[in-house]
Structures are given as C-alpha cells and as structure tokens.
Image (cartoon, rainbow, N blue to C red):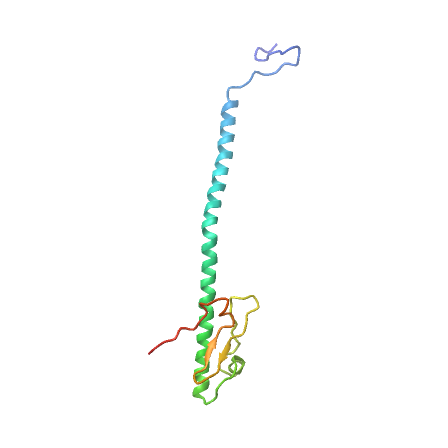
Length: 142
C-alpha cells in the first residue's frame, strides 16, 4: 500500500492536502483583484476623457462653421466686385460660380444652409446661431 495515501472513514484512498493550495488561492485572488483595479482605473480614465472628446468635437464644428461662413463671405465679396448682389447662398454656388458646392453647417446631422442677410453690406448668417451662439463670423475692424 502507498504510504502517501490516507484512508478516510472507509472511503477510497485520497491523497493528503497539499500545502501549495493556499498559495494558489492567494495568486488567483491577486490576479482577480488586479483585474478589478485595472477595470476601475480604465473606467476613471474614460470618465475623464469622454467629456474632453465631446468638447473637442463641438469646438471643431464651430471652427468648421466659421470657416464655411468665411468662404461664403469671400464669395459675396467677389460677386460684389463683379457687380452682382447675391440674394442667397445658392446664387454663389455651382460648377462655374464662386463656390463649387454649397457649404452646410456641420453641427447638425443633415446640415442646414447658410443665409445671407441682405442690406448695404450683405452678411452671412448660420442657420443654427440660435442653438449655437458661437457660430458667428467675427467682424474685423481694419
């Protein structure tokens, strides 16, 4: 009979408990605990990063809108130099006109067309200026 086997209440022979079982349990718990800590740290970093991404997107859309309005403003100036006063942005856009394709405000999904405020000095107006008050073409005093 094997001397390493212990009989327990007439049951089959079972090997004795190993001293390493506790070490294995500690290692397993440490790995699981490390995974939880890692998940917690990633969650905190995501909570910090997501608002910054949203802010960066909004800022980029605002800059794109202002750039579109500058492009339309330049087309208005060229049109005035040619002796015509545009009544809408569509008058400036086309294959052989001042702008090839009509720019749209990037802050809304389908994009809204810009308007031209008629008057002595036509000005470009973003259709979403009520929703996004920073979508305004800055005025320059030369």
